[in-house]
Image (tube, rainbow, N blue to C red; front, side, top):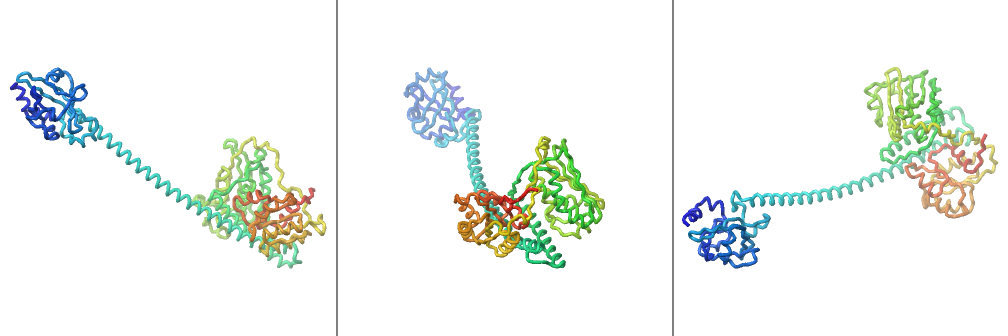
Length: 556
């Protein structure tokens, strides 16, 4: 057995099998590997194996030499009596002298099991595949732990970001609501005095308060023109704000494009005549019907035509042309002028809000720079675009392209509202219909009331919603002009209460208000209003609408 002892004593052998041990036939420990000796400190040469280990998974616990002799072709698993250490060993029986050499390795399935036993990776031999397994397992565990920690971190970040986003959205909603409230309030505060300015100007021009001298008439007309200019500016500002806030909804209808063009041209005909500028219209019969918001389309054309007149010198010419473009599936509307033209560098910033060009001639004219910005945004709301071609000193051409389907060109022509209607007041008796005018502004009550009385209407007044309800029940007017922003009770609540009474279910109620934000019209109509008019309103138009709802208009 000398050769065996030589092998056992060899240091390299002990390194190869750090968990080895040698027994005699009585199961006494003779030799022990360095790693095993460190972990099971009480297992020393001369001690019995049964004091330290028992058999595992062999149906018996007794360590019998003869039994072990028969297991030389099998793996034997020992279980530590005092710990969770398992040894997976192979027995080699050496006959001379009779010795049992056990070589193997700890049976470890996860790196976490090693900590309680006291095993570390350097205890394993270099050739031991268990090390690779444990390292892979450990790496996997570390990766899983890191992944879990990362997931927790990401979840925490997502939760934090979600919370921040919720706070930001809440703040944005608050800011947007504040902006909407501000715009609504400014609309009311600016339009209310304008209603008085324009209303009184119109009444004075029509002689409601007596005759005027030529100089007085000229001054009143200047006031009216300035008022309308200010109204246009307010409308442009509000429209820009609405579009920017995503609050502008389009009222899509099928409109006769030629009629829209002619109506738009009438807005600039006076100024064009003063400057002796010829304005021509060329229409494409194929593109006769367009699907768009008629009012916004007219707003686009009026802005372009107004600019063309403004920047075209006396004696020049302007053309408005419509044409179909099947290749682009579009209807194109072009406004061409013989004006001052625009440089290429200026075209790039032409559609920016509040931008004025540097041309010397352009500085002769007042303006905010909102018109073209509004044109572009309104065109884009329709799904269209705006193109510009210009040459300094020769003129400009603005082309608006809007989506179009050929099938829409075959829709029946839609007649403009109130076309060919006679609104002459001499058809109404001196004691005309009884009108209730509800407004908390004394100037508006006086201005509108005096004008309507001059048209032979009988006008009675109320200054809040509650008073309006009482007057309606007592006097039973034939029509109500209801302001919306009222003290005590607002106009919407007053309309709702009146509509709840069957007696007044058919009473014409017209909402006459300075509020012009998105949703105001819908709220008024939902409450029961028959129509919605925005201040300032032309008093002739107001008379026209009143007669219409009273069925007193006569078609020529």
